[in-house]
Length: 299
Image (cartoon, rainbow, N blue to C red; front, side, top):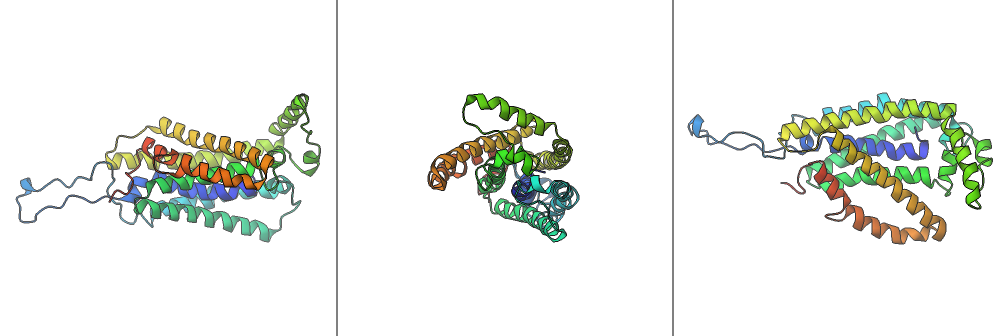
């Protein structure tokens, strides 16, 4: 829905997001063991450990993975291929005017494979108790997706995104001073009211809405099964929106640094991202806590 460059990391993020939403189910739990010789009334209750859901038979490699694959095959890939096939110049950021059937097949296979990889890697991290790293799979994939839109392969990603085809991109107003903002805003407004934009609204609502519904249901069921006191659907959606919005802001700042300093700027950006997002107690850990995910390295 956002073009080939963004749809590939979106595929990974979708698989990782579905796994993260089912964190309690995939993490599993050990039930209290009882002495078989003891009287029934003296046996400890076989309730799940608070904050962890009872392990579902086959959950780690079964129905949750199948759900992620069904989303990819039935929803994400068809909507992505529809936009790519009908608007190839826009979907390739004006680099290609036509995509062969083989290229479209390869794109579909890549998106399915990345969804599977996102789910399986995140599932493995969850089972190992690396909850913060599991959350990072979603956060960093969202950041990469935003970078693909904002910066693109040559720094003009946002201009290419707001241009329906090559001719429209060539007509994009240059930004020389503040007075050019009006012309740029007019160009953006024409794109946002174009037929392409209408198709993006419909396919995006379908893909994002279905993914949000799946993640919301899995997350709420997981909290209930685990007996954990977690956020309701609206607050969880707010956390997800905060992750997406934060990724967009970081992408804009990173693109500006790369434009000004070149790719050497990444030498400064990567350590900052590590401290701000990945390190213990950083953003990923806060997201995991806000969503009431299982405890880190909970054995």
